[in-house]
Image 1 (cartoon, chains in turn blue, green):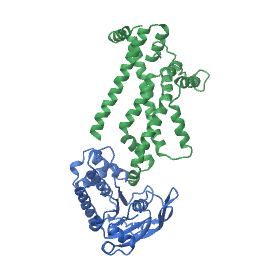
Image 2: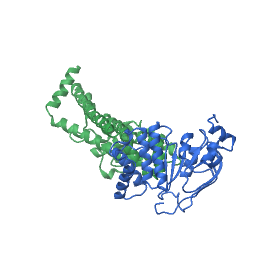
Image 3: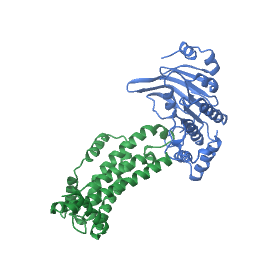
Image 4: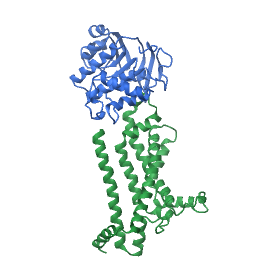
Amino acid sequence: MHGALSILPLKVDRLQYAARGAELIKGISFELGAGARTVIMGPNGAGKSLILRLCHGLLAPTGGSVAWAGAGAGREGAPRRHAMVFQRPVMLRRSARANLVHALSLAGAGRPDRARRADEALERFGLAGFAGRPARLLSGGEQQRLAIARAWALKPQVLFLDEPTSALDPAATRAIEEMIAGIHADGVKIVMTTHDLGQARRIADEILFLHHGRLVEHAPAAQFLDHPSTKEAGAFVKGELLW
Amino acid sequence: MDGDGAFSTAIQLILSADPVLAEIVALSLRVTLSAVLVSCLIGLPLGAALALSRFPGRGAVIIVFNALMGLPPVVAGLLVYLLLSRSGPLGFLSLLFTPTAMIIAQTILILPIIVSLTRSVVDDLWREYADQLRSLGSSATRAIPTLLWDGRFSLVTVILAGLGRAMAEVGAVLIVGGNIAGHTRTMTTAIALETARGDLALALGLGIILLTLTLILNTGAFVSGRIAERVAG
């Protein structure tokens, strides 16, 4: 991918995370390889967002490890090979295009390179019409599409998405899912969280099911959604309230 | 003493384009705006850095800057006076009773306001932006210009707070400037002097001009801020 050595597989080993005395991630291990779209599911508070943040390096584990394959993949200051899209996109008070240019500048791209890649990303996702508009004045769906274009412009090998459509209407959700499919087709590894079963069915190749900070199931999507092997997952898939 | 007299005096002062008055107004603006400029150049980055950094004693530094917002102007004036007086540590610079001394004194008064309020604005922004900016690979230092630019509309109000304190201030400039006619006399020190001399109409007239100037500066900042906000979101 992009001519660089792959940072996959991602090996997560006995990962723990605690905050203010509460154990939130209780020793989770898994391995993510290239290709498959991984969807992390679970009820609120299961630790879905935390797992993404820990893998992306926004949080430091209190135990265990997150290891990327390539040396220096997560090194501070080095250009990251994984990018993240948040539930609520944070846009700077400047134009849509300037937001992309800013992100590329943080990623260490040279001046002419930034402009070219920003335009390329806007063009790629049909956002060229928004280029000069103040990003904060765009609708929620438009801002999220812009956030995904911004992440794509950074040419990541892995794209983390944290409930990217949970605040959006069906039309915007559909647009986002199309973008994700396109990015996956480019060869980018997709790792996203959702609590929407329909979305998981549309997107997931494999599913990690979390409950109370533990990994309860890690299975191919069809198997998990149709024949969950644990009681918790069964209840979740049937739409029963789980806590 | 009647208000009409003061008002007509103010109008007459302006219409006559009295060169002495023009000089006083010009010096007031020069001292105040210079102090605001210097305070912003130091205070905006310093306030943002204070918001983004974590070090032992940070809480104490924040408390000290907050407390210094209430520093009595005469005390600031006295400190600068001691510093700049002939026998003081910086006496060799011969700055006492010059406009430069007044700018230094006012900077000491405004800087804590700019630092404390900027820290508060940037604190709030960072709470919202931290994950996104760190995800994009921004260090805390690199985030300072980004956050100052994104907080620009709130920071206009911060700067106006500093400007207001400087425009209104009399104690510090009186002590370190000496209210020397044609050299270090400002609007506020002139008002204090004319009041003491009993020329209340002139004092009030100067007061009206000072208030009007303050109003004009604030209107300009407010309107331009609003327009920019509408354009930039």
